[in-house]
Image 1 (cartoon, rainbow, N blue to C red):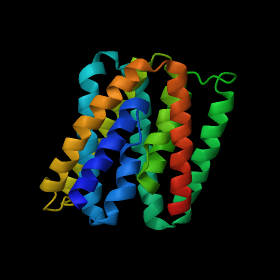
Image 2 (image 1 turned 120 degrees about the vertical axis):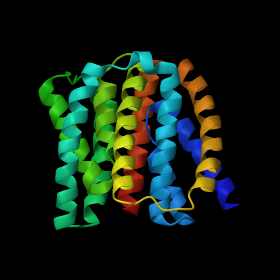
Image 3 (image 1 turned 180 degrees about the vertical axis):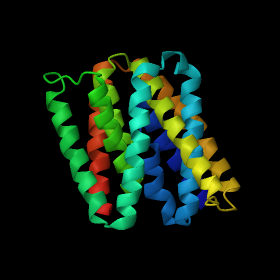
Image 4 (image 1 turned 30 degrees about the horizontal axis):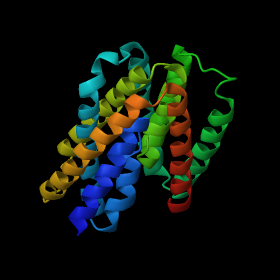
Length: 239
């Protein structure tokens, strides 16, 4: 029953990310720790997320905007180092709840004013969003939302947006798995649940891809902001 639940969670979260570009990790890490050890759930989520990135990129890798991707990703690494140091020196559950409130406010602001205020893809803006995303990743293990809001604002083409965001997540997941492997933080016994999750992932990404192809860019932006606000509320209330 637990493995079936894992498969269904993977299917629904894969569908969500295949449509909006993010959300897989947030949903999976809200459900899997209910019946799996946290460290196992974290690694399964990362492995499946990487697999999902590759699955989505198989159809849109030609649309990756490497120029827009490079600088935010570089500054994200710098920000994550600072975030991990801050969490180590002054850990507090309040940090994550503040992130949730911040995401809700940001999503509401973008939803109502994104057509009036435009973010330009300047080096300064890329550096700011990269550092903020890195800090969020280091402090809360949630680095995606700030970067998603940046990319959906500066990339008008939905295929380019999807390709660029999934490449960003792919690079981040590869880095995380390499570091966990080097530090011997990948536990045994995760093969079976990972395979169950992979089955749901294939179904969800296939269905999500069909929805994504039929949705226009304006509706995609609205969906991103709504899911972002919902994610922020979940993080704020559950820490």
